[in-house]
Image (cartoon, rainbow, N blue to C red; front, side):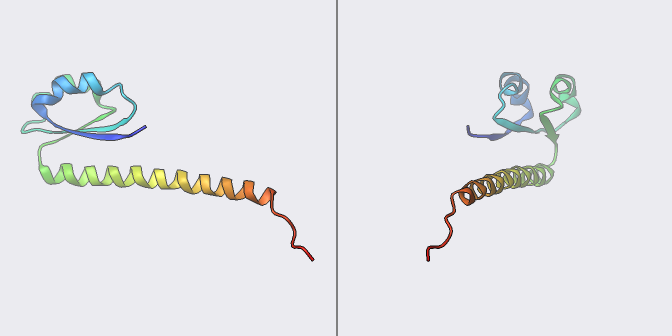
Length: 98
Protein backbone atom coordinates (compact mmCIF):
# COMPACT_ATOMS: atom_id res chain seq x y z
CA UNK A 1 0.00 0.00 0.00
CA UNK A 2 1.36 3.39 -0.99
CA UNK A 3 1.28 6.19 1.57
CA UNK A 4 0.69 9.85 0.79
CA UNK A 5 1.11 13.29 2.26
CA UNK A 6 -1.62 15.51 0.84
CA UNK A 7 -0.94 19.21 0.30
CA UNK A 8 -3.84 21.38 -0.80
CA UNK A 9 -5.10 24.94 -0.74
CA UNK A 10 -7.56 26.11 1.87
CA UNK A 11 -10.28 26.70 -0.71
CA UNK A 12 -10.06 23.12 -2.02
CA UNK A 13 -9.44 21.52 1.36
CA UNK A 14 -12.97 22.11 2.62
CA UNK A 15 -14.22 19.82 -0.15
CA UNK A 16 -11.31 17.37 -0.41
CA UNK A 17 -10.62 16.63 3.24
CA UNK A 18 -14.02 15.09 4.09
CA UNK A 19 -13.66 12.83 1.04
CA UNK A 20 -10.15 11.53 1.73
CA UNK A 21 -9.51 11.70 5.46
CA UNK A 22 -10.84 8.19 6.09
CA UNK A 23 -8.14 6.62 3.91
CA UNK A 24 -5.41 5.10 6.08
CA UNK A 25 -2.74 5.58 3.42
CA UNK A 26 -2.99 9.38 3.70
CA UNK A 27 -0.49 9.98 6.47
CA UNK A 28 -1.04 13.72 6.93
CA UNK A 29 -2.99 16.52 5.26
CA UNK A 30 -1.28 19.89 4.88
CA UNK A 31 -3.35 22.95 4.04
CA UNK A 32 -1.83 26.16 2.77
CA UNK A 33 -4.16 29.14 3.07
CA UNK A 34 -4.12 32.91 3.41
CA UNK A 35 -6.22 32.88 6.58
CA UNK A 36 -6.26 29.94 8.96
CA UNK A 37 -9.11 31.41 10.98
CA UNK A 38 -11.42 31.44 7.96
CA UNK A 39 -11.12 27.64 7.75
CA UNK A 40 -11.24 26.87 11.47
CA UNK A 41 -14.93 25.94 11.65
CA UNK A 42 -14.90 22.99 9.27
CA UNK A 43 -11.29 22.01 10.04
CA UNK A 44 -11.98 21.31 13.73
CA UNK A 45 -13.53 17.96 12.79
CA UNK A 46 -10.22 16.81 11.28
CA UNK A 47 -7.58 18.07 13.69
CA UNK A 48 -6.07 14.60 14.11
CA UNK A 49 -5.05 14.42 10.42
CA UNK A 50 -4.80 18.07 9.42
CA UNK A 51 -2.14 20.77 9.68
CA UNK A 52 -2.80 24.31 8.44
CA UNK A 53 -0.20 26.89 7.40
CA UNK A 54 -0.33 30.47 6.22
CA UNK A 55 3.37 30.75 5.40
CA UNK A 56 5.03 28.56 2.73
CA UNK A 57 8.30 28.13 4.63
CA UNK A 58 6.46 26.80 7.69
CA UNK A 59 4.56 24.33 5.53
CA UNK A 60 7.70 23.10 3.79
CA UNK A 61 9.62 22.73 7.03
CA UNK A 62 6.86 20.65 8.61
CA UNK A 63 6.35 18.59 5.46
CA UNK A 64 10.06 17.69 5.37
CA UNK A 65 10.02 16.81 9.08
CA UNK A 66 6.96 14.58 8.72
CA UNK A 67 8.48 12.85 5.69
CA UNK A 68 11.71 12.32 7.62
CA UNK A 69 9.79 10.79 10.53
CA UNK A 70 7.84 8.53 8.21
CA UNK A 71 10.95 7.25 6.41
CA UNK A 72 12.81 6.70 9.68
CA UNK A 73 9.88 4.60 10.94
CA UNK A 74 9.93 2.62 7.70
CA UNK A 75 13.69 2.11 8.04
CA UNK A 76 13.28 0.84 11.61
CA UNK A 77 10.66 -1.66 10.43
CA UNK A 78 13.04 -2.88 7.70
CA UNK A 79 15.88 -3.25 10.21
CA UNK A 80 13.60 -5.25 12.52
CA UNK A 81 12.57 -7.52 9.65
CA UNK A 82 16.21 -8.03 8.68
CA UNK A 83 17.08 -8.93 12.28
CA UNK A 84 14.20 -11.42 12.38
CA UNK A 85 15.37 -13.03 9.14
CA UNK A 86 18.92 -13.25 10.42
CA UNK A 87 17.65 -14.97 13.55
CA UNK A 88 15.70 -17.46 11.43
CA UNK A 89 18.78 -18.12 9.27
CA UNK A 90 20.86 -18.88 12.38
CA UNK A 91 18.51 -21.77 13.19
CA UNK A 92 19.65 -23.50 9.99
CA UNK A 93 23.35 -22.78 10.34
CA UNK A 94 25.41 -25.97 10.04
CA UNK A 95 28.59 -26.58 11.99
CA UNK A 96 31.79 -26.53 9.91
CA UNK A 97 32.79 -29.83 8.32
CA UNK A 98 35.97 -31.51 9.31
